[in-house]
Image (tube, rainbow, N blue to C red):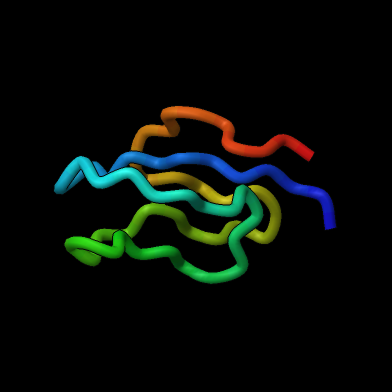
Length: 57
């Protein structure tokens, strides 16, 4: 399974969290619970700003 990991900044509390680019479930912020990524059947749709690619595969 090839995919990238991204650091995503939460739009509500500015917390940064690492998220898999092909997330199969909704990813919530660990601090405030806001949605950071939604699955789309392929690459996830990010709600927050992607600040960097942590690991490219």
